[in-house]
Length: 116
Length: 115
Image 1: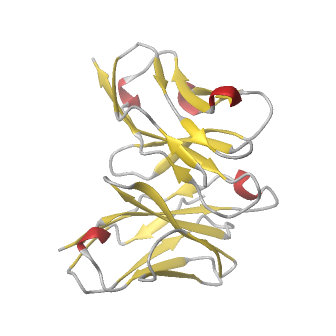
Image 2 (image 1 turned 60 degrees about the vertical axis):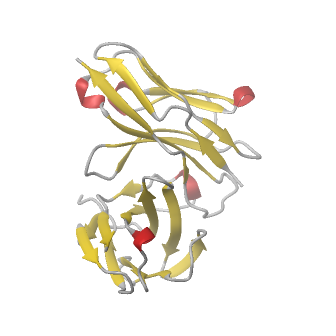
């Protein structure tokens, strides 16, 4: 079974631009979560989608948004980029059955975003 | 709100020696606890998890962890480390109340293996 894939793997943008990152979950997984990883703040939860609906959102400004498609693929968008948005963005998918948070999250390799 | 503390930013261990990585959590009820490992340029891989029951859990790659409610700890152990264990290790907690708050991670411990 193929793992979680994220595209692109690396991205360089300038301040003020916007960016869209893509995540394809493991086949059959309906839950997709996004995390931001930086040296200073560590790993922080951005949001989680299930069946095309955002179920929860972390403490990030409205510039960070996402969506999920009917095939469970997800995109996240960051508008008006700031230098502090430079980070590794990780996507994770899980089956999210009746076990809820017990379902293992499988992480992709991440997208490294650099904002200049 | 739940939180996770990993007191050691870096740990250096000789190859073949035992390892213990510390993790303390703050949560109102019994949490769901996880240990993940991240190698350079890669995503996170789950080593083990604790939900309930036996407080000593076994994971992959020879790792184990013990849940101690009285100390709010979930320390990761390995009896003999290998050079390939050098990586970043993250402890995480999830809401056991059925919410979808995502995982709350500690800041990580960077493990260095000395030959």
